[in-house]
Amino acid sequence: MNMNAVLQFLDVKRDEGISADAIRAELSEVICTLGFDYFTLVRQPGPESDASDIMLAGQWPKGWPELYVKRKYAAIDPIIRYLGHSQRGYRWGEPMLAFEQDPHRNRMERMMVDARRHGLEDGYVFPVHGRRGLVGVLSVAGKAVDLTQSEISMMDALAKKAFWDILQMLDPGAYERIARPVELQMTRREMETLEYLGYGMTSNEMGATLGLSAHTVDWYMNGIQDKLQAKNRHHVVAIAFRLGLIS
Image 1 (cartoon, rainbow, N blue to C red):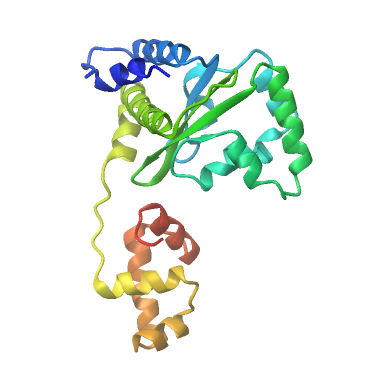
Image 2: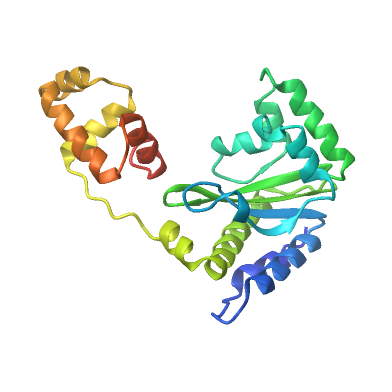
């Protein structure tokens, strides 16, 4: 496949005067050139965005979003659920294989049949990650298009470039909050405590391993919780995982 259009999109340095609509038009043209009929670029719903403004660019076939909502496919959509398993772009068939034994398998297959009836025969998903975890998703679909692994990597780069460029134009405040690096200083003891917490250890177990009292471990945990602005220990683990502090 000729990926020149993708390379050109990636190489362009856009000035401050360009509009989000202009970037959307560029992105749409690139995706059309690659042979895809539909695409969406969305923000991840959460503290930085709500359901009313998650769409950054693109469109699905007429009637598909309404049917998707009516049949409550969001709860079982394997393509979206698989976002938690992947750090790179993937084809729709990949999550279908991953969830082959899922109790909702029949509804998943029904969803894919409905998608094909709306012209969504196949597609790819490209997650966009920031320093704090998943922040956006580029989805492309339509007729079946075969992408090599190197082409998927280029599409990953396209998704990131388009997401950050459009978000910066539309919502500079959100761009600044989710794009800026995390400044966090942890002591050696705090990092050790955090690592053992990630293993599921209790304060007593961590204390026995580190040669500390459970009270001292709790003191370290309170400090970690404050630094991460976490609500509880479960929240600490979730934030630490997103920040790459534990794996």
